[in-house]
Amino acid sequence: MTLHFRIHSFQRIFESSRFGALYLAAAIYVAISATTGLILSVLAIRQGQIEASALLAVIPIGTLYDLVTCLYLFAPFALYLFLIPQKLFNSKAQRLFMTVVFSATVFGLMYLGAVEYYFFDEFNSRFNFVAVEYLIYPHEVFVNIWESYPVARALLAITLITAVLMWRLYPRLRARHAGRAFSIAPTVDGADLLAGDAGPV
Image 1 (cartoon, rainbow, N blue to C red):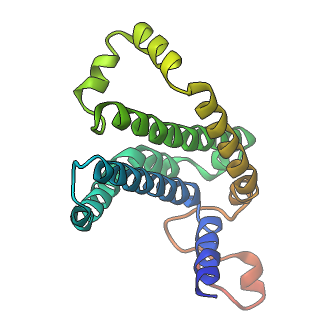
Image 2 (cartoon, one colour):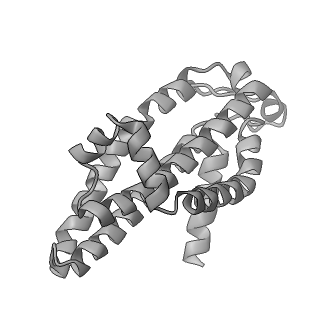
């Protein structure tokens, strides 16, 4: 009952704000990052790099880092949603743009989690300077990665998960664009005024 109430409350927040897609994308980022961190921590314990008791410090610190990164990562998106005029926000082009960007974001976050898992499995470390050096020789590195890891299967799995997730979320993303006009200041809806129930939109 409590879990259902919390999920329903989150859905109402998502549907009642033009920032709903931002909230959801940030939540997905934190969830994927936390899951990745937990999986890598378990691997580190199995490999003897850390003690199990270290999770009491690793998880809170990792979550804090994820939240700070989330603020930096989605700040441009938040600014965009804040500044875009309502007429443009409700347009079909904007709806398509938001759907494509949201889908690409979800895909990219899940792909990054998978890449980090294999990187840790290979080098016993999270992303570091080695990952940066990979970018210097992209062709050789990508060919080696394609031959050594199940890249095609990972891409297919992530694509399917993204497609299912977007299939479930698209009605809410579309409904968000059909909502009332966004305004910083409270406004009065004409129908509510005629009904004698004026209030902020």
